[in-house]
Length: 100
Image 1 (tube, rainbow, N blue to C red):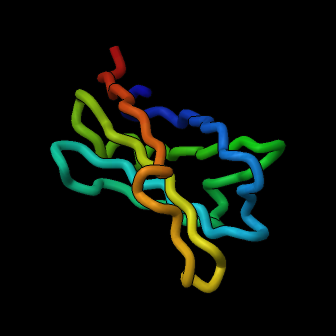
Image 2 (image 1 turned 90 degrees about the vertical axis):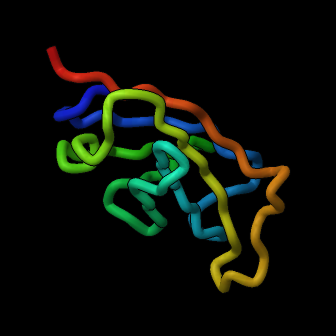
């Protein structure tokens, strides 16, 4: 994604995971430091048909330097007594770019 833009990121969720049963947490990091964390319910996150859509704002994208961004999604039950094991956590590497 580019800095100073409003991208919508999409992630496929494992079967059975939805925001009515789980709190979904998206963490974005650079250089091993957390830059942005979003949790459902949030106006920036929507779950529909097994997909998680994250709408980033200009302010959000400007938090990142140009380069790789690690994105990690995990989920826990609504009372936080059960959390997905670390081997089930999934993630992606995104790349930020300057607007030219």
